[in-house]
Amino acid sequence: MRAAAPAHPGWSSPAPSPARSRRSASVGCTAGGWAALSAARRWTPPGPRRPSTPGGAMSFFGFGQSVEVEILLNDAESRKRAEHKTEDGKKEKYFLFYDGETVSGKVSLALKNPNKRLEHQGIKIEFIGQIELYYDRGNHHEFVSLVKDLARPGEITQSQAFDFEFTHVEKPYESYTGQNVKLRYFLRATISRRLNDVVKEMDIVVHTLSTYPELNSSIKMEVGIEDCLHIEFEYNKSKYHLKDVIVGKIYFLLVRIKIKHMEIDIIKRETTGTGPNVYHENDTIAKYEIMDGAPVRGESIPIRLFLAGYELTPTMRDINKKFSVRYYLNLVLIDEEERRYFKQQEVVLWRKGDIVRKSMSHQAAIASQRFEGTTSLGDVRTPSQLSDNNCRQ
Picture 1 (tube, rainbow, N blue to C red):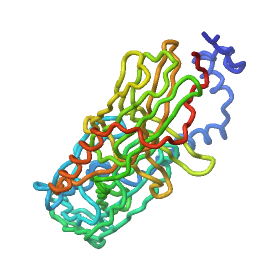
Picture 2: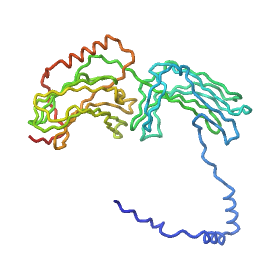
Picture 3: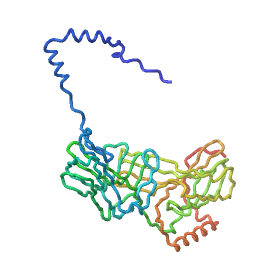
Picture 4: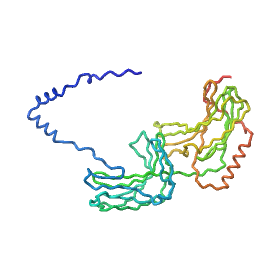
């Protein structure tokens, strides 16, 4: 345990008693001193001025008009909602949008005091897409910024609503909340005021849909440690949608290490920043045990990993030159001496639409059966070293 730091020299003297302090103050005060003291008591510095009032409610010291602001979407009853993780790790449901969809609705203003008017310097609504890096929270990098003026400066004497529409809005990136970065889309209604603005925000979620060929190239690789371990692993695809199934196999060509456990991990690597200010954050999304016990030469271990049960996002590469999200399949072997050997292989994850043609699904099923039925190892490929150089026969 670390020893406590010694007290600061300036803190070692005891504070004077209240009586002594009052006596010193009364003795040292002259006429000029009393005048200065009185002036100091009369003058009070102004407090900080708040630029806006979040939450959609406004009242200036309880004497002015109070208003509740609400943002309503035109298709709120029929629009699908999607779960999205917030910064604190909780999941909440938001309205779901896709790239190119129109965002329309109304901004409702409800006055609390019917006998008072609301003066304003203008009312507007914005559609914003922005990236926030947690280590640079003061700067928000906006990649989408649309503005609609709803009312000119004037007065509001009764509750009313203002219609708005953002036509065919470009939403190029998927909503994302990570460990070091957040990408969000939101609507922001603002009532400009002299002293403080009234601001109301409503977040939405954007999903990006991709199209990849169902029959994409498989991943085959041969890895080993010279004279100790030689294995070949194969995955049926290099690109998987978020509800896909990873099908593969591992073939042991040479085993001179006492392996007791084998697993496959899904690792998410989040990269933020550029140049010297690059941060990498690895997160193990899933651990899937594929073998428990020592394998023998010539043994083949099948792999079948369902992705639907894990919290995955599409692969995101160089998003607005701010961050990237990549996924890796990590094959891990553990020997009896608790040494770990692993090999990583990047895979691409993408989001698939809800509507899929039956012919495409039929082709995918045939391809899976064809892959599982094959027994050939294929051509010998260039071996790569595993991460642990220690190996015993």
